[in-house]
Image (cartoon, rainbow, N blue to C red; front, side, top):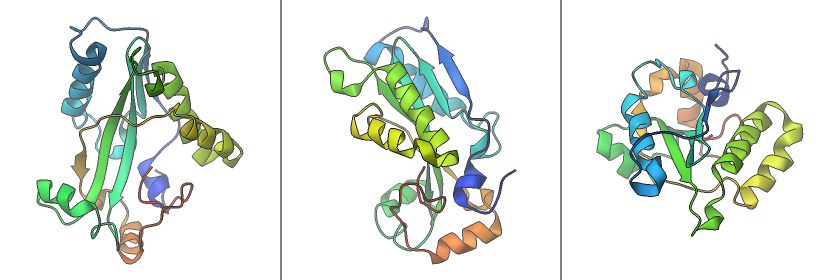
Length: 187
């Protein structure tokens, strides 16, 4: 396991996921995208013992992309800002939040992008943490909405999934918005 920073402890190599052309699930809302999101959320703790063991991305090319995001709700400023509401739902003072953000295709909402465009943007963003030369391209995808927002259902992990050294430093740090920092509070 990699260690030393929140990024290194929450992510491991290789980047992995699932790509499918389509699915046979009953398509209700957003082409079945929300049903698959619910299934990912229901099963995300059934195998992984740590967030770095979760699938990084799932893409069903005909409907949606599910990108894994990780937020560290530990430290000065984080637990005082937006986190109290979220943490209150779990009756916790801090933690690590994981969520699959679902971005789906909708012909009536072209600004949502395409499932494959979202997949490419997600993978480039993850690789850019490892290869700084790709960061301008990853930022371009963000600015061009190839990696748009979506909907998610967050889940909480105990802070103890990170090393004692990293958690100790995070608790003393003020939240940093620096995008490519391995000490950022979200990835």
